[in-house]
Image: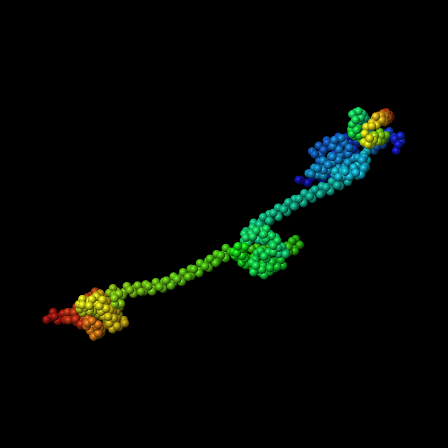
Length: 486
Length: 118
Protein backbone atom coordinates (compact mmCIF):
# COMPACT_ATOMS: atom_id res chain seq x y z
CA UNK A 1 0.00 0.00 0.00
CA UNK A 2 1.39 3.38 -0.99
CA UNK A 3 1.52 6.08 1.69
CA UNK A 4 -1.37 8.53 1.24
CA UNK A 5 -0.74 11.72 -0.67
CA UNK A 6 -1.96 14.16 1.93
CA UNK A 7 0.63 16.89 1.87
CA UNK A 8 -2.28 19.32 1.24
CA UNK A 9 -3.90 18.76 4.61
CA UNK A 10 -0.66 19.10 6.55
CA UNK A 11 -0.33 22.81 6.06
CA UNK A 12 -2.52 25.13 8.11
CA UNK A 13 -4.30 26.57 5.08
CA UNK A 14 -4.63 23.28 3.19
CA UNK A 15 -8.12 22.23 2.07
CA UNK A 16 -9.65 19.31 3.90
CA UNK A 17 -12.10 17.01 2.17
CA UNK A 18 -15.13 17.04 4.44
CA UNK A 19 -18.33 15.03 4.28
CA UNK A 20 -21.42 16.30 6.05
CA UNK A 21 -23.87 13.56 7.05
CA UNK A 22 -27.05 15.37 8.07
CA UNK A 23 -30.69 14.58 7.39
CA UNK A 24 -31.82 18.10 8.33
CA UNK A 25 -31.37 20.17 5.12
CA UNK A 26 -31.30 23.49 7.02
CA UNK A 27 -28.52 22.39 9.35
CA UNK A 28 -26.67 20.88 6.37
CA UNK A 29 -27.01 24.13 4.39
CA UNK A 30 -25.67 26.27 7.21
CA UNK A 31 -22.85 23.81 8.03
CA UNK A 32 -21.81 23.64 4.41
CA UNK A 33 -21.70 27.45 4.23
CA UNK A 34 -19.53 27.64 7.33
CA UNK A 35 -17.09 24.97 6.04
CA UNK A 36 -16.87 26.44 2.56
CA UNK A 37 -16.16 29.85 4.08
CA UNK A 38 -13.22 28.12 5.80
CA UNK A 39 -12.09 27.03 2.27
CA UNK A 40 -12.65 23.28 2.59
CA UNK A 41 -14.05 20.90 -0.05
CA UNK A 42 -17.46 19.83 1.18
CA UNK A 43 -19.89 17.07 0.19
CA UNK A 44 -23.28 16.46 1.78
CA UNK A 45 -25.12 13.23 2.33
CA UNK A 46 -28.74 13.43 3.50
CA UNK A 47 -28.57 10.09 5.33
CA UNK A 48 -26.11 7.84 7.07
CA UNK A 49 -26.50 5.25 4.34
CA UNK A 50 -25.71 7.74 1.56
CA UNK A 51 -22.74 9.03 3.55
CA UNK A 52 -21.29 5.51 3.88
CA UNK A 53 -21.62 4.94 0.11
CA UNK A 54 -19.78 8.22 -0.61
CA UNK A 55 -17.06 7.49 1.96
CA UNK A 56 -16.37 4.10 0.43
CA UNK A 57 -15.80 5.45 -3.08
CA UNK A 58 -13.85 8.51 -2.06
CA UNK A 59 -12.32 8.62 1.40
CA UNK A 60 -12.70 11.90 3.32
CA UNK A 61 -10.31 13.60 5.71
CA UNK A 62 -13.18 14.54 8.03
CA UNK A 63 -16.72 13.34 8.44
CA UNK A 64 -19.07 15.72 10.33
CA UNK A 65 -22.14 13.69 11.13
CA UNK A 66 -25.40 14.23 12.95
CA UNK A 67 -25.98 11.66 15.63
CA UNK A 68 -29.66 10.98 15.17
CA UNK A 69 -30.53 10.01 11.62
CA UNK A 70 -33.08 7.49 10.40
CA UNK A 71 -31.50 4.19 9.26
CA UNK A 72 -27.71 4.35 9.61
CA UNK A 73 -27.22 6.86 12.44
CA UNK A 74 -24.04 8.78 13.29
CA UNK A 75 -22.65 6.04 15.57
CA UNK A 76 -23.20 3.33 12.98
CA UNK A 77 -21.62 5.48 10.29
CA UNK A 78 -18.60 5.93 12.55
CA UNK A 79 -18.32 2.19 13.20
CA UNK A 80 -18.51 1.50 9.47
CA UNK A 81 -15.81 4.10 8.80
CA UNK A 82 -13.52 2.55 11.39
CA UNK A 83 -14.11 -0.94 9.96
CA UNK A 84 -12.36 0.17 6.77
CA UNK A 85 -8.79 -1.05 7.42
CA UNK A 86 -7.07 0.40 4.39
CA UNK A 87 -6.55 3.98 3.37
CA UNK A 88 -5.82 7.14 5.28
CA UNK A 89 -7.39 7.95 8.64
CA UNK A 90 -10.74 9.76 8.70
CA UNK A 91 -11.39 12.19 11.56
CA UNK A 92 -14.94 11.76 12.82
CA UNK A 93 -16.86 14.64 14.46
CA UNK A 94 -20.29 13.82 15.86
CA UNK A 95 -22.87 16.62 15.95
CA UNK A 96 -25.22 16.38 18.84
CA UNK A 97 -27.13 18.06 21.50
CA UNK A 98 -26.80 14.91 23.57
CA UNK A 99 -24.72 15.55 26.60
CA UNK A 100 -25.29 12.43 28.66
CA UNK A 101 -22.08 10.83 29.87
CA UNK A 102 -23.04 7.28 28.81
CA UNK A 103 -23.97 8.41 25.31
CA UNK A 104 -20.59 10.09 24.84
CA UNK A 105 -18.71 7.07 26.18
CA UNK A 106 -20.60 4.90 23.67
CA UNK A 107 -19.68 7.32 20.91
CA UNK A 108 -15.97 7.33 21.81
CA UNK A 109 -16.04 3.52 21.92
CA UNK A 110 -17.48 3.53 18.40
CA UNK A 111 -14.46 5.54 17.21
CA UNK A 112 -15.71 9.12 17.37
CA UNK A 113 -12.84 11.61 17.63
CA UNK A 114 -14.74 14.73 18.72
CA UNK A 115 -18.17 16.17 19.50
CA UNK A 116 -19.79 19.40 18.45
CA UNK A 117 -23.00 20.80 19.84
CA UNK A 118 -25.88 21.87 17.62
CA UNK A 119 -26.45 24.51 16.49
CA UNK A 120 -22.87 24.72 15.34
CA UNK A 121 -20.70 27.54 16.60
CA UNK A 122 -18.41 28.70 13.76
CA UNK A 123 -15.41 29.56 15.93
CA UNK A 124 -15.67 26.28 17.80
CA UNK A 125 -15.92 24.31 14.54
CA UNK A 126 -12.80 26.04 13.21
CA UNK A 127 -10.93 25.18 16.41
CA UNK A 128 -12.08 21.54 16.22
CA UNK A 129 -10.89 21.31 12.60
CA UNK A 130 -7.46 22.60 13.64
CA UNK A 131 -7.31 19.73 16.10
CA UNK A 132 -8.52 17.39 13.37
CA UNK A 133 -5.74 18.56 11.06
CA UNK A 134 -3.11 17.93 13.77
CA UNK A 135 -4.44 14.44 14.48
CA UNK A 136 -4.63 13.65 10.76
CA UNK A 137 -1.04 14.76 10.26
CA UNK A 138 0.05 12.55 13.15
CA UNK A 139 -1.92 9.65 11.72
CA UNK A 140 -0.32 10.21 8.30
CA UNK A 141 3.12 10.37 9.86
CA UNK A 142 2.35 7.18 11.74
CA UNK A 143 1.20 5.48 8.55
CA UNK A 144 4.30 6.61 6.67
CA UNK A 145 6.55 5.38 9.44
CA UNK A 146 4.59 2.17 9.68
CA UNK A 147 4.95 1.62 5.93
CA UNK A 148 8.68 2.31 6.14
CA UNK A 149 9.00 0.01 9.13
CA UNK A 150 7.10 -2.67 7.31
CA UNK A 151 9.35 -2.25 4.28
CA UNK A 152 12.48 -2.33 6.43
CA UNK A 153 11.20 -5.37 8.27
CA UNK A 154 10.61 -6.99 4.89
CA UNK A 155 14.18 -6.19 3.79
CA UNK A 156 15.52 -7.56 7.06
CA UNK A 157 13.49 -10.72 6.77
CA UNK A 158 14.66 -11.20 3.18
CA UNK A 159 18.29 -10.56 4.13
CA UNK A 160 17.96 -12.86 7.11
CA UNK A 161 16.43 -15.61 5.00
CA UNK A 162 19.09 -15.21 2.32
CA UNK A 163 21.87 -15.35 4.90
CA UNK A 164 20.24 -18.36 6.51
CA UNK A 165 19.91 -20.13 3.14
CA UNK A 166 23.51 -19.25 2.32
CA UNK A 167 24.79 -20.49 5.68
CA UNK A 168 22.76 -23.68 5.58
CA UNK A 169 23.85 -24.41 2.01
CA UNK A 170 27.59 -23.74 2.47
CA UNK A 171 29.57 -26.77 1.31
CA UNK A 172 31.96 -26.36 4.27
CA UNK A 173 30.57 -27.76 7.52
CA UNK A 174 29.89 -24.61 9.58
CA UNK A 175 28.48 -24.00 13.03
CA UNK A 176 27.99 -21.02 15.30
CA UNK A 177 27.95 -20.96 19.07
CA UNK A 178 27.19 -18.21 21.59
CA UNK A 179 29.48 -16.81 24.27
CA UNK A 180 28.33 -19.58 26.62
CA UNK A 181 29.60 -22.10 24.07
CA UNK A 182 26.09 -23.28 23.17
CA UNK A 183 25.40 -24.22 19.55
CA UNK A 184 23.15 -21.73 17.75
CA UNK A 185 23.45 -22.77 14.10
CA UNK A 186 24.51 -26.02 12.45
CA UNK A 187 24.42 -26.23 8.66
CA UNK A 188 23.64 -29.16 6.41
CA UNK A 189 27.29 -29.95 5.70
CA UNK A 190 27.88 -30.14 9.48
CA UNK A 191 24.91 -32.48 9.83
CA UNK A 192 26.46 -34.70 7.20
CA UNK A 193 30.00 -34.56 8.63
CA UNK A 194 29.07 -35.29 12.26
CA UNK A 195 25.98 -37.37 11.35
CA UNK A 196 23.90 -35.28 13.79
CA UNK A 197 20.76 -33.29 12.93
CA UNK A 198 20.50 -29.59 13.83
CA UNK A 199 17.66 -30.21 16.30
CA UNK A 200 19.79 -32.81 18.09
CA UNK A 201 22.59 -30.33 18.78
CA UNK A 202 20.78 -26.99 19.16
CA UNK A 203 21.72 -25.27 22.46
CA UNK A 204 24.04 -28.13 23.42
CA UNK A 205 27.61 -27.32 24.46
CA UNK A 206 29.70 -27.22 21.27
CA UNK A 207 32.58 -29.06 22.95
CA UNK A 208 30.38 -32.09 23.57
CA UNK A 209 29.34 -32.23 19.94
CA UNK A 210 32.31 -31.47 17.72
CA UNK A 211 35.08 -33.30 19.63
CA UNK A 212 35.67 -36.77 21.04
CA UNK A 213 35.14 -37.19 24.81
CA UNK A 214 38.88 -37.75 25.33
CA UNK A 215 39.65 -34.53 23.44
CA UNK A 216 37.58 -32.21 25.68
CA UNK A 217 40.58 -30.24 26.89
CA UNK A 218 41.47 -29.19 23.37
CA UNK A 219 37.81 -28.46 22.47
CA UNK A 220 37.31 -26.26 25.54
CA UNK A 221 40.51 -24.43 24.74
CA UNK A 222 39.31 -23.81 21.17
CA UNK A 223 35.97 -22.44 22.39
CA UNK A 224 37.54 -20.24 25.06
CA UNK A 225 40.19 -18.81 22.73
CA UNK A 226 37.52 -18.08 20.09
CA UNK A 227 35.15 -16.41 22.57
CA UNK A 228 38.18 -14.44 23.79
CA UNK A 229 38.49 -12.93 20.30
CA UNK A 230 41.16 -15.10 18.68
CA UNK A 231 40.88 -16.30 15.10
CA UNK A 232 41.87 -19.98 15.14
CA UNK A 233 43.34 -21.37 11.95
CA UNK A 234 43.51 -24.98 10.83
CA UNK A 235 43.71 -27.13 13.96
CA UNK A 236 43.31 -30.74 12.90
CA UNK A 237 41.64 -33.35 15.10
CA UNK A 238 40.15 -36.79 14.67
CA UNK A 239 36.52 -37.06 15.77
CA UNK A 240 34.31 -40.14 15.85
CA UNK A 241 30.72 -40.12 14.61
CA UNK A 242 27.91 -41.85 16.54
CA UNK A 243 28.51 -45.03 14.49
CA UNK A 244 32.19 -44.98 15.53
CA UNK A 245 33.63 -44.10 12.13
CA UNK A 246 36.52 -41.60 12.31
CA UNK A 247 36.51 -38.21 10.60
CA UNK A 248 39.60 -36.09 10.13
CA UNK A 249 38.54 -32.46 10.66
CA UNK A 250 40.33 -29.13 10.22
CA UNK A 251 38.88 -26.50 12.60
CA UNK A 252 38.99 -22.73 12.04
CA UNK A 253 37.06 -20.05 13.95
CA UNK A 254 36.43 -16.32 13.99
CA UNK A 255 34.39 -14.26 16.46
CA UNK A 256 30.97 -12.74 15.64
CA UNK A 257 30.51 -9.15 16.85
CA UNK A 258 27.52 -6.87 17.23
CA UNK A 259 27.38 -3.26 16.00
CA UNK A 260 29.09 -2.10 19.19
CA UNK A 261 32.02 -4.45 18.49
CA UNK A 262 31.19 -6.76 21.39
CA UNK A 263 31.71 -10.48 20.76
CA UNK A 264 28.32 -12.24 20.71
CA UNK A 265 29.37 -15.63 19.36
CA UNK A 266 31.74 -17.58 17.17
CA UNK A 267 31.63 -19.02 13.66
CA UNK A 268 33.47 -22.33 13.42
CA UNK A 269 34.21 -24.09 10.12
CA UNK A 270 35.06 -27.80 10.20
CA UNK A 271 36.66 -28.86 6.90
CA UNK A 272 36.37 -32.58 6.32
CA UNK A 273 39.80 -34.05 5.45
CA UNK A 274 38.64 -37.65 5.75
CA UNK A 275 38.68 -38.43 2.04
CA UNK A 276 42.10 -36.80 1.66
CA UNK A 277 43.56 -38.62 4.68
CA UNK A 278 42.07 -41.95 3.52
CA UNK A 279 43.64 -41.40 0.11
CA UNK A 280 46.98 -40.67 1.74
CA UNK A 281 46.66 -43.87 3.77
CA UNK A 282 45.74 -45.83 0.67
CA UNK A 283 48.67 -44.31 -1.17
CA UNK A 284 51.07 -45.18 1.67
CA UNK A 285 49.71 -48.73 1.74
CA UNK A 286 50.09 -49.03 -2.02
CA UNK A 287 53.64 -47.68 -1.79
CA UNK A 288 54.43 -50.26 0.90
CA UNK A 289 53.02 -53.05 -1.26
CA UNK A 290 54.97 -51.74 -4.24
CA UNK A 291 58.18 -51.70 -2.17
CA UNK A 292 57.58 -55.28 -1.05
CA UNK A 293 56.93 -56.31 -4.61
CA UNK A 294 60.11 -54.53 -5.69
CA UNK A 295 62.14 -56.30 -3.02
CA UNK A 296 60.63 -59.61 -4.07
CA UNK A 297 61.43 -58.74 -7.65
CA UNK A 298 65.07 -57.95 -6.80
CA UNK A 299 65.34 -61.24 -4.91
CA UNK A 300 63.76 -63.01 -7.86
CA UNK A 301 66.23 -61.37 -10.21
CA UNK A 302 69.17 -62.64 -8.13
CA UNK A 303 67.69 -66.12 -8.07
CA UNK A 304 67.11 -65.88 -11.78
CA UNK A 305 70.70 -64.78 -12.36
CA UNK A 306 71.91 -67.74 -10.30
CA UNK A 307 69.55 -70.05 -12.16
CA UNK A 308 70.72 -68.62 -15.46
CA UNK A 309 74.33 -69.08 -14.42
CA UNK A 310 73.54 -72.61 -13.38
CA UNK A 311 71.74 -73.19 -16.66
CA UNK A 312 74.71 -71.77 -18.56
CA UNK A 313 76.97 -74.02 -16.54
CA UNK A 314 74.77 -77.00 -17.39
CA UNK A 315 74.76 -76.04 -21.07
CA UNK A 316 78.56 -75.94 -21.22
CA UNK A 317 79.25 -79.01 -19.03
CA UNK A 318 79.25 -82.68 -19.74
CA UNK A 319 76.64 -84.22 -17.52
CA UNK A 320 78.50 -87.43 -16.73
CA UNK A 321 82.00 -86.23 -15.98
CA UNK A 322 81.56 -82.57 -15.05
CA UNK A 323 84.15 -81.55 -17.66
CA UNK A 324 83.42 -78.94 -20.37
CA UNK A 325 81.45 -80.50 -23.22
CA UNK A 326 82.51 -80.78 -26.81
CA UNK A 327 80.67 -77.72 -28.06
CA UNK A 328 82.20 -75.51 -25.37
CA UNK A 329 85.62 -76.87 -26.19
CA UNK A 330 85.24 -76.04 -29.90
CA UNK A 331 83.93 -72.54 -29.01
CA UNK A 332 86.92 -71.94 -26.76
CA UNK A 333 89.37 -73.06 -29.43
CA UNK A 334 88.75 -70.16 -31.79
CA UNK A 335 89.50 -67.23 -29.40
CA UNK A 336 92.46 -69.17 -27.97
CA UNK A 337 93.82 -69.70 -31.45
CA UNK A 338 93.33 -66.01 -32.31
CA UNK A 339 95.03 -64.95 -29.05
CA UNK A 340 97.97 -67.25 -29.72
CA UNK A 341 98.35 -65.93 -33.25
CA UNK A 342 98.15 -62.30 -32.13
CA UNK A 343 100.62 -62.70 -29.28
CA UNK A 344 102.73 -65.26 -31.17
CA UNK A 345 102.39 -67.70 -28.34
CA UNK A 346 102.56 -71.45 -28.78
CA UNK A 347 99.32 -73.41 -28.37
CA UNK A 348 98.93 -77.18 -28.12
CA UNK A 349 96.01 -79.55 -28.40
CA UNK A 350 96.03 -82.98 -26.78
CA UNK A 351 93.43 -85.63 -27.71
CA UNK A 352 93.20 -88.84 -25.74
CA UNK A 353 91.13 -92.00 -25.95
CA UNK A 354 90.71 -94.78 -23.36
CA UNK A 355 92.15 -98.00 -24.77
CA UNK A 356 89.79 -100.89 -25.25
CA UNK A 357 86.87 -99.06 -23.62
CA UNK A 358 84.34 -100.99 -25.66
CA UNK A 359 85.68 -104.24 -24.30
CA UNK A 360 85.50 -102.80 -20.80
CA UNK A 361 81.90 -101.89 -21.28
CA UNK A 362 81.08 -105.26 -22.68
CA UNK A 363 82.85 -106.96 -19.81
CA UNK A 364 81.63 -104.86 -16.90
CA UNK A 365 78.48 -103.12 -18.15
CA UNK A 366 77.65 -99.52 -18.88
CA UNK A 367 77.37 -98.32 -15.24
CA UNK A 368 80.94 -99.50 -14.69
CA UNK A 369 81.83 -97.79 -17.98
CA UNK A 370 80.31 -94.56 -16.75
CA UNK A 371 82.18 -94.85 -13.46
CA UNK A 372 85.40 -95.40 -15.37
CA UNK A 373 84.73 -92.31 -17.49
CA UNK A 374 84.12 -90.22 -14.33
CA UNK A 375 87.29 -91.43 -12.67
CA UNK A 376 89.30 -90.97 -15.85
CA UNK A 377 87.99 -87.41 -16.24
CA UNK A 378 88.85 -86.64 -12.62
CA UNK A 379 92.42 -87.76 -13.17
CA UNK A 380 92.77 -85.55 -16.26
CA UNK A 381 91.39 -82.53 -14.38
CA UNK A 382 93.45 -83.16 -11.33
CA UNK A 383 96.71 -83.36 -13.22
CA UNK A 384 96.17 -80.43 -15.58
CA UNK A 385 97.09 -76.80 -14.99
CA UNK A 386 94.23 -74.52 -13.96
CA UNK A 387 94.59 -72.47 -17.14
CA UNK A 388 94.25 -75.62 -19.27
CA UNK A 389 90.85 -76.48 -20.72
CA UNK A 390 89.88 -80.15 -20.24
CA UNK A 391 86.79 -81.42 -22.10
CA UNK A 392 85.01 -84.62 -22.94
CA UNK A 393 84.54 -84.79 -26.71
CA UNK A 394 82.16 -87.73 -26.72
CA UNK A 395 82.31 -91.44 -25.86
CA UNK A 396 85.72 -92.26 -24.35
CA UNK A 397 87.52 -89.42 -26.11
CA UNK A 398 88.84 -86.36 -24.26
CA UNK A 399 90.68 -83.16 -25.26
CA UNK A 400 92.98 -80.78 -23.42
CA UNK A 401 93.86 -77.32 -24.71
CA UNK A 402 97.26 -76.16 -23.46
CA UNK A 403 97.72 -72.39 -23.75
CA UNK A 404 101.20 -70.90 -24.11
CA UNK A 405 102.59 -74.40 -24.37
CA UNK A 406 105.12 -75.54 -27.02
CA UNK A 407 105.73 -78.96 -28.54
CA UNK A 408 108.07 -80.39 -25.95
CA UNK A 409 106.02 -79.19 -22.99
CA UNK A 410 102.87 -80.53 -24.61
CA UNK A 411 104.44 -83.92 -25.13
CA UNK A 412 105.58 -83.76 -21.50
CA UNK A 413 102.11 -83.01 -20.24
CA UNK A 414 100.61 -85.81 -22.34
CA UNK A 415 103.28 -88.22 -21.23
CA UNK A 416 102.66 -87.31 -17.58
CA UNK A 417 98.96 -87.94 -17.98
CA UNK A 418 99.53 -91.22 -19.80
CA UNK A 419 101.76 -92.37 -16.93
CA UNK A 420 99.27 -91.24 -14.27
CA UNK A 421 96.53 -93.24 -15.95
CA UNK A 422 98.66 -96.28 -16.57
CA UNK A 423 99.95 -96.22 -12.99
CA UNK A 424 96.56 -95.52 -11.39
CA UNK A 425 95.10 -98.29 -9.34
CA UNK A 426 91.83 -99.05 -11.13
CA UNK A 427 89.18 -101.14 -9.43
CA UNK A 428 88.43 -103.66 -12.10
CA UNK A 429 91.44 -103.84 -14.32
CA UNK A 430 94.40 -101.89 -15.61
CA UNK A 431 93.45 -98.99 -17.84
CA UNK A 432 95.59 -97.17 -20.39
CA UNK A 433 94.98 -94.39 -22.85
CA UNK A 434 96.43 -93.26 -26.20
CA UNK A 435 97.38 -89.63 -26.85
CA UNK A 436 97.68 -87.47 -29.98
CA UNK A 437 99.26 -84.02 -29.76
CA UNK A 438 99.40 -81.13 -32.18
CA UNK A 439 101.12 -77.78 -31.55
CA UNK A 440 100.51 -74.52 -33.36
CA UNK A 441 104.04 -73.52 -34.35
CA UNK A 442 104.17 -71.51 -37.55
CA UNK A 443 101.02 -69.45 -36.69
CA UNK A 444 99.77 -70.01 -40.15
CA UNK A 445 97.51 -72.94 -39.34
CA UNK A 446 94.35 -72.10 -41.28
CA UNK A 447 91.60 -73.62 -39.21
CA UNK A 448 90.47 -75.34 -36.06
CA UNK A 449 89.41 -78.32 -38.07
CA UNK A 450 92.94 -78.69 -39.39
CA UNK A 451 94.46 -78.67 -35.91
CA UNK A 452 91.91 -81.12 -34.55
CA UNK A 453 92.32 -83.35 -37.55
CA UNK A 454 96.09 -83.51 -37.23
CA UNK A 455 95.88 -84.19 -33.47
CA UNK A 456 93.36 -86.92 -34.25
CA UNK A 457 95.74 -88.46 -36.75
CA UNK A 458 98.47 -88.46 -34.13
CA UNK A 459 96.08 -90.21 -31.71
CA UNK A 460 95.27 -92.74 -34.36
CA UNK A 461 98.94 -93.31 -34.86
CA UNK A 462 99.34 -94.00 -31.13
CA UNK A 463 96.55 -96.56 -31.36
CA UNK A 464 98.17 -98.14 -34.41
CA UNK A 465 101.50 -98.31 -32.68
CA UNK A 466 100.06 -100.46 -29.88
CA UNK A 467 98.27 -97.96 -27.59
CA UNK A 468 99.30 -96.50 -24.22
CA UNK A 469 101.55 -93.96 -25.87
CA UNK A 470 101.90 -90.37 -26.96
CA UNK A 471 102.32 -89.29 -30.57
CA UNK A 472 102.93 -85.70 -31.69
CA UNK A 473 101.55 -84.82 -35.12
CA UNK A 474 104.87 -83.27 -36.14
CA UNK A 475 106.60 -86.60 -35.53
CA UNK A 476 103.93 -88.23 -37.62
CA UNK A 477 105.03 -86.20 -40.61
CA UNK A 478 108.64 -87.19 -40.24
CA UNK A 479 107.70 -90.87 -39.77
CA UNK A 480 105.51 -90.74 -42.85
CA UNK A 481 108.25 -88.91 -44.73
CA UNK A 482 110.69 -91.61 -43.62
CA UNK A 483 108.28 -94.31 -44.72
CA UNK A 484 107.88 -92.67 -48.06
CA UNK A 485 111.68 -92.31 -48.44
CA UNK A 486 112.13 -95.99 -47.58
CA UNK B 1 -35.85 30.42 30.35
CA UNK B 2 -39.60 30.47 30.03
CA UNK B 3 -41.06 30.06 26.58
CA UNK B 4 -42.85 33.38 26.90
CA UNK B 5 -39.51 35.07 27.48
CA UNK B 6 -38.00 33.74 24.24
CA UNK B 7 -38.01 35.70 21.02
CA UNK B 8 -39.79 34.14 18.07
CA UNK B 9 -36.82 34.68 15.79
CA UNK B 10 -33.24 35.91 16.34
CA UNK B 11 -31.61 36.75 13.00
CA UNK B 12 -28.18 37.45 14.53
CA UNK B 13 -27.11 33.81 14.24
CA UNK B 14 -27.65 33.69 10.50
CA UNK B 15 -25.99 37.05 10.05
CA UNK B 16 -23.01 35.85 11.99
CA UNK B 17 -22.72 32.68 9.98
CA UNK B 18 -23.20 34.34 6.60
CA UNK B 19 -21.28 37.48 7.38
CA UNK B 20 -24.39 39.48 6.60
CA UNK B 21 -24.93 37.81 3.24
CA UNK B 22 -28.61 38.61 2.69
CA UNK B 23 -29.15 36.22 -0.17
CA UNK B 24 -27.81 33.33 1.93
CA UNK B 25 -30.10 34.29 4.80
CA UNK B 26 -33.06 34.28 2.41
CA UNK B 27 -31.96 30.93 0.98
CA UNK B 28 -31.73 29.39 4.45
CA UNK B 29 -35.07 30.80 5.59
CA UNK B 30 -36.79 29.58 2.42
CA UNK B 31 -35.37 26.10 3.03
CA UNK B 32 -36.39 26.27 6.70
CA UNK B 33 -39.93 27.29 5.70
CA UNK B 34 -40.17 24.42 3.22
CA UNK B 35 -38.61 21.71 5.35
CA UNK B 36 -40.28 22.88 8.58
CA UNK B 37 -43.68 22.77 6.95
CA UNK B 38 -42.95 19.29 5.58
CA UNK B 39 -41.74 18.22 8.99
CA UNK B 40 -44.97 19.28 10.68
CA UNK B 41 -47.03 17.45 8.03
CA UNK B 42 -45.01 14.28 8.53
CA UNK B 43 -45.35 14.66 12.31
CA UNK B 44 -49.10 14.75 11.89
CA UNK B 45 -48.95 11.61 9.76
CA UNK B 46 -46.74 9.87 12.32
CA UNK B 47 -49.22 10.79 15.03
CA UNK B 48 -52.06 9.36 12.97
CA UNK B 49 -50.12 6.14 12.45
CA UNK B 50 -49.04 5.93 16.11
CA UNK B 51 -45.38 6.06 15.05
CA UNK B 52 -43.73 7.44 18.16
CA UNK B 53 -40.23 6.67 16.92
CA UNK B 54 -40.86 8.63 13.70
CA UNK B 55 -42.46 11.43 15.69
CA UNK B 56 -39.45 11.60 17.98
CA UNK B 57 -37.07 11.74 15.03
CA UNK B 58 -39.10 14.52 13.32
CA UNK B 59 -39.24 16.58 16.51
CA UNK B 60 -35.43 16.21 16.78
CA UNK B 61 -34.97 17.45 13.20
CA UNK B 62 -37.40 20.36 13.69
CA UNK B 63 -35.56 21.34 16.88
CA UNK B 64 -32.19 21.29 15.08
CA UNK B 65 -33.25 23.39 12.07
CA UNK B 66 -35.17 25.89 14.23
CA UNK B 67 -32.20 26.44 16.52
CA UNK B 68 -29.88 26.70 13.54
CA UNK B 69 -31.83 29.56 11.93
CA UNK B 70 -32.44 31.32 15.29
CA UNK B 71 -36.16 30.40 15.65
CA UNK B 72 -35.72 30.14 19.38
CA UNK B 73 -39.31 29.63 20.53
CA UNK B 74 -39.91 26.95 17.89
CA UNK B 75 -36.60 25.21 18.69
CA UNK B 76 -37.27 25.19 22.43
CA UNK B 77 -40.84 23.91 21.97
CA UNK B 78 -39.72 21.12 19.57
CA UNK B 79 -36.96 20.17 22.02
CA UNK B 80 -39.37 19.88 24.93
CA UNK B 81 -41.80 17.73 22.97
CA UNK B 82 -38.91 15.59 21.64
CA UNK B 83 -37.98 14.75 25.23
CA UNK B 84 -41.61 14.16 26.24
CA UNK B 85 -42.43 11.92 23.29
CA UNK B 86 -39.27 9.91 23.96
CA UNK B 87 -40.31 9.48 27.61
CA UNK B 88 -44.11 9.17 27.32
CA UNK B 89 -44.84 8.20 23.74
CA UNK B 90 -47.74 9.73 21.78
CA UNK B 91 -50.14 10.23 24.72
CA UNK B 92 -50.19 14.05 24.42
CA UNK B 93 -49.37 14.26 20.72
CA UNK B 94 -52.55 16.26 19.92
CA UNK B 95 -51.46 19.01 22.34
CA UNK B 96 -47.98 18.83 20.88
CA UNK B 97 -49.29 19.32 17.34
CA UNK B 98 -51.49 22.15 18.41
CA UNK B 99 -48.74 24.00 20.23
CA UNK B 100 -46.25 23.50 17.42
CA UNK B 101 -48.67 24.61 14.71
CA UNK B 102 -49.53 27.72 16.67
CA UNK B 103 -45.85 28.51 17.21
CA UNK B 104 -45.13 27.76 13.52
CA UNK B 105 -47.96 30.11 12.52
CA UNK B 106 -46.55 32.91 14.71
CA UNK B 107 -43.10 32.35 13.26
CA UNK B 108 -44.30 32.49 9.67
CA UNK B 109 -46.14 35.75 10.36
CA UNK B 110 -42.98 37.14 11.95
CA UNK B 111 -40.85 36.15 9.00
CA UNK B 112 -43.35 37.58 6.50
CA UNK B 113 -43.30 40.86 8.38
CA UNK B 114 -39.52 40.89 8.34
CA UNK B 115 -39.43 40.20 4.59
CA UNK B 116 -41.84 43.00 3.94
CA UNK B 117 -39.82 45.31 6.18
CA UNK B 118 -36.68 44.39 4.20
